Image (tube, one colour):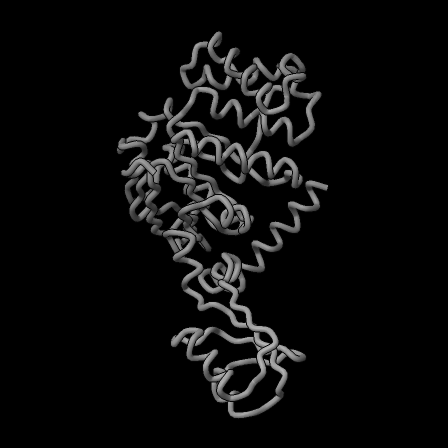
Length: 316
């Protein structure tokens, strides 16, 4: 991270037909970071992105984009992949990428050269002069992403970029995002797929019902929950049982409970001194999914799982 903010937002509010879509959102996106806006469909992610980019104006609140209070002044330094995909089916891949770059001020001849390099470097060299309509959905989306980055923007904004892609193309997209960040570009993307945010992001905003429920580092979100202990012992009962928390649950031969605040060392000592006969003891740090449920609630978690189920059906 190079320091400073690529995007800052304070108290963004937007309503449609009197119903709040975004309700007082605060964000801080560090320069050079990969930042995720995580939440179910309908949570307000797209409206937030459009306000940040200046596509729509907030009813109240403020935002800065690459240091500008008027986001459209920075438009040529931004690459934006909207949720609604769109390419001219008959246009050749190289021309489509160059055309998208030209919309951001990149000369067409430069765009064509960069487009050819992007395609060849990413295993699509055979499609340089082939029309978009000859591509699979995943390949077409990759071409549109190339058009989003061909002018070498300082900030790349991707709205639900993984939606509808199969696992192979999702992996390719993840690598492209990492490559952009490694080159110093700030990447912000919205998603309802928790594992993408967990694998890629340094910092996230969790949004539900138009409000930010959490904003900060992924590790800080996970640290809201205590580690989980899995314990199996030879002895079924004994003095060592007093070392287990009252809420410990036994499933078959295995005990499950949160790691006590005192830590693992006192727990181990009590188990050994009490003759428990430890056969298995593991400590698992909660994942982002567990943190999402705790932060956003069960309803938001069910909604995000339903969104992912629909994605699988679409990709199939």
